[in-house]
Length: 382
Length: 84
Image (cartoon, rainbow over all chains, first blue to last red; front, top):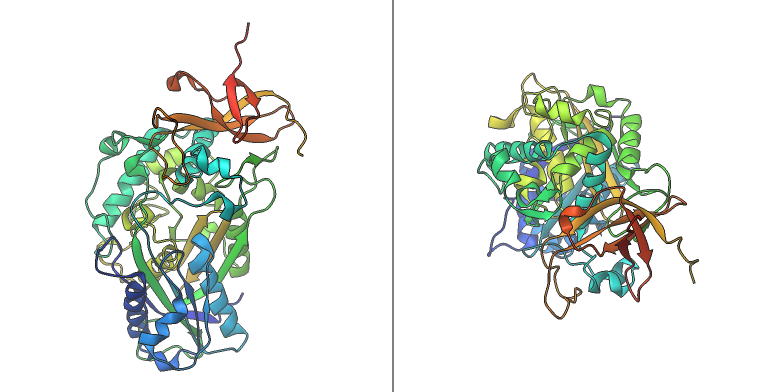
């Protein structure tokens, strides 16, 4: 993909948990913010793609946004909902379907862990009845194996979460804005060994929206556009280890995150060494550690020293999850992927305030991962 | 019908379910929820099977420990093998 598509505007709703806002209201907030950022009216949007996992249909937003007759496609793709909407938006521009396209993701989840039904995943009812339909178990078991193979310590997991809350405290839009020490994180009680309560993100609510357009159209009254160098979605290949796997094939594990990240870098003509700021799926601390390697930013095991040395801090060599990630922002499934892109856009424009990466970053990367083995990645530059 | 599994393997990874899963779909035992272990057992042919681990002491679980995988009416269970 060439750099012919730009992000002209990006918007968020407040992330967290409220009693009074619906998922749709979050989405409207984010869309209006993105349009204002782009300096474009809703009437200029020629096509839209969006969705939520559990908060309704995106195409109903036209009731409030305006009945302009545009094509509005609903996307429902788990954690890759935002990424899939983004890929569709890019393709719509490249195919000449529209010059200005909206991508929006939103969600609102009840408290507590997700409670999927076995039949919806093609699994025997026994997996639910016997207590194995719990997503957090997978994250515990994946990092447990990874720590065993590559010498990652529990303290490193705590440092990742400590950074998330610290970055969240610098982000006015984050849900968790109180710093928590590594010691307190380690002592917060095991949820699924080796992961403790404060190492996990919580299902929450929020929305993110992007206004994309052909580079030739950008340059109106809005903020400086950011080039979307590539956007890629992949599903798993044989031999991967995923949420709700009754079995894992023998041999070395494959990784859908590795596949998606590699394809995104290839399409962008850039590599991990070019990236100045990145957002990686951090459902819990261990996920961020493993995704650093799966996305190509380090070798397996190097995270132990990199994190101890502060490499992933805002002032480090590779700032990761500068907005506090899912741990500080919560996980509204449909919104998280586009929240990451929003954050990179702010960083590349130099508008990230207290959490701004120093040295005027030029290239950013985003990555989401989710069940049942799906990943979406983007590469952005200014 | 799937082929019968080779019965004995090594623990590949594990965790403990420390909180009661949401019901439905979870059906707690008659005596109520208690934390339980689960994991993947790597069988001699390399395949790794998800199983509930029937271990008495949750602090005794180690990657590599030998386990016998037993079919049940539902999710497979794995029982530590006592090496004599």
